[in-house]
Every structure is written in C-alpha cells, then in structure tokens.
Image (cartoon, rainbow, N blue to C red; front, side, top):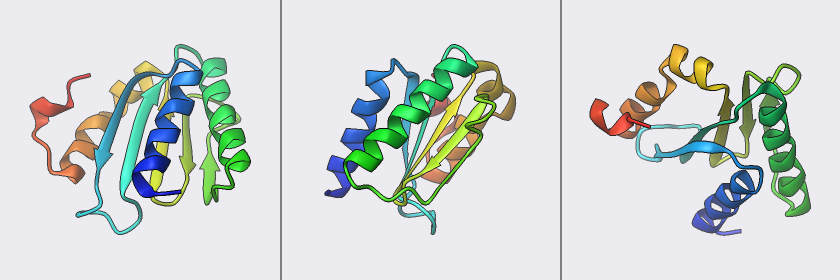
Length: 117
C-alpha cells in the first residue's frame, strides 16, 4: 500500500467510527521513527476502544503490520503504531492535559497557532 494511500485508508477507518478532531502531522523530516502522526479523539473510553479496535481489525484485513499498541485496556489514550503512521486516540481532556497537539506540531515544524483544533 502506497504511503499516502495508507494514510488515507487510516483516516477513512477513523471516520468509520466517528473519530473527532482528527489532526495529521507530517513528521517525516524531523522524526526517525515514523512519517505521520495522527491524533484524534472519541467521546468516551468505550468509543476510543471501538475506534482503536476497528483500526486494528482493518489493518489486519489489509495486511498492514501493527508494530505496537498501548492503552487499549483503559481507552483514555490509545496508541497504535503502524510503522510509518502512528495513531493516537484520546479522550478530549487527556489530549488537552498533555498538550499533545503542541508537541507534535513542533515536531512537524508548525507554529503554535497552527495547533488549534
């Protein structure tokens, strides 16, 4: 699967489960571990689990290698590592608490005002 096609598929899978406030950070020039970081949120821990499980199921169905996953048991912050795309699924309050968009925007070389959701 081509790089942009993979990212597009992942974004579609997130949309399938109504992931909200989806942001994509292109960090290929500044990161040694991935090319894209996707940050999104669900409205409850069960919603986040459903988003992550759908993403994992679709990755398997499309023969994408899952390098790692974390947080699926609690659903407040779930990470799914698909190699050149890493997906973070947050509860809104956790996303704000950790200021994760600011961190990834800096990594992507964006200005702070570009992080508004």
